[in-house]
Amino acid sequence: MDSQPARSEYKKVWSALSATEEQAKLYVIGVTEEAALQATGEETLRFLQQSVGIRKDDVVLEIGCGIGRVGKVVAPLCRKWIGCDVASNMLSLAAERLRDLPGMKLKEISGYDLRSVADASVDVVYCTVVFMHLESWDRYSYVLEAFRVLRPNGRIYVDNINLCSEGGWKVFETHRAFSPENRPPHMTQNSTPQEIETYLTRAGFSDVRIRTDDDWIRASGRKQGVLEKTKLKS
Picture (tube, rainbow, N blue to C red):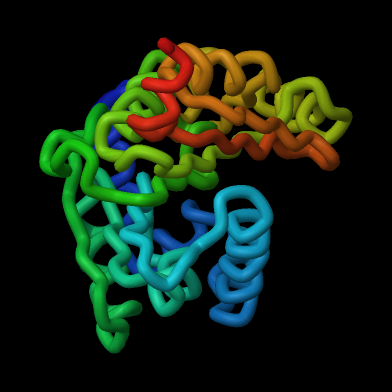
């Protein structure tokens, strides 16, 4: 019997989990009904609007776009939306789902960086319901990459389930119950608010804000503009 891929082999893991449309929907967000997918996408959009804002002239990039669940509601609001994912199967499904939206572009990435995206070329980077599937080092690598590809005054949003909340702790205990040999590589690993805040501040983001009013950590920050950096040095 073949052993399952390691957690950090993201391309293998998520290509296998997105072999069919129903399977991809289930592993992306836990539901398959279109109305439920739409509702969760709109909920994420509300958090994005409250934290970083989506403007009509923005170039927006999503890390881990999956089937385009969030992209479907974000892309119509901005100048250009770039959906990045590690699994070609996910991108094929996203292409079909978003085929009628103008200003949409999809990119397959390695799972560890955004090397195909140019420096200082986007205004907003967001990554939702993805950090839970990544190793901690790779979470930080994506934050660093977001800083690189953002223009001055560009904004970032990331989230994960909060280990320090009651609901987050229940998720932790549920997954801890799996025996080591039976732990699926995509299983959820929570974060702490301090972890996420540290990633953003260490990467160089300013105005870092951490929201923890439910079982999620929702974090945002801004890449300082050139003029602001000059003022700080004078």
